[in-house]
Each structure stands twice: as C-alpha cells, then as structure tokens.
Length: 166
Image (cartoon, rainbow, N blue to C red; front, side, top):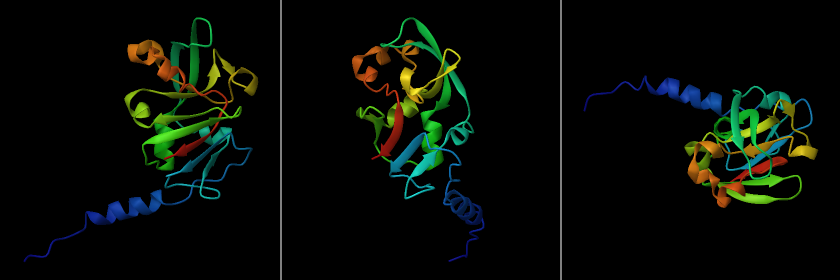
C-alpha cells in the first residue's frame, strides 16, 4: 500500500488549535453571557461579552415592524449566527433569558434561516433596559410572511442577557 502525504492535515490541525483558544475577557461589565454547548469560553466555562466585544462583530441594519411598537423601526446590531459562530455553538436550541426572567427556547435553525439581529439600537438610539435593551432579539418579520406568526413574536426577547445553547 503506498504511503500518503497527510500534509493537508497540518493547516486543519493548526486552525483547530487557534479556534480552541479562549475568547478575550471582557474589560467592562458583561452585557451578554453564553453558556451550554459552546467551544470557546473566557470565564467559568461561559462566554461573557461586554459592549466593546460585541461591537467587533459585523454590524447589520434592519427595518421592520414589531408587535410591540408602532410603525416600522430601524434596528442596528449584529447577526445572532455570527455570535454563535464566534463561540462555537453546537446544539438544537438557544434558551434565551431576559432581565425580567422571561425565558424561551429558540431553534438554532432560525438563526441560519433568517437574518435574526441582536439589536442594540432602535431608530438611532441606544437601547436601554427601560426600552427593551440593552440587547433585543429582532426577527426580519416584514420580509417573511411566516415570521408574522405569534410563535415567532414570542422569540423576540428584549432585555436579553443570557443564552444557553442546548
């Protein structure tokens, strides 16, 4: 049997080692904590993110109506799938927890099928806990008829502060 060169494997192994390195630690108060089935952590087997860390993710904008505001709003933030890729999330659902203890499980496939935003601004204003912030899961509801179903409205978690990947 001829010997095969496994040279192609070396870059893959090096990439895997780089991905296994921990995330940088937040320098300010963490706004978001991701736990559960993730590969990349930075504190106590979880990934903690402050505002500066979250702002390093690619920024996206979305104009859509919501079931809890009037008219069409302009949201800015990052895509949930970019965050999940950053932490190396693997699973079926994300249990999203809000500051007011609201908890709902969201299928991870939502974040692949749709450009679900984790918004930190609405209509040019930074979101605060008084107005559904600092982070709000926002679906592109006006662009997809199926997202105008009440089942998806329950997945719009405002005051988001923790995700557990299951």
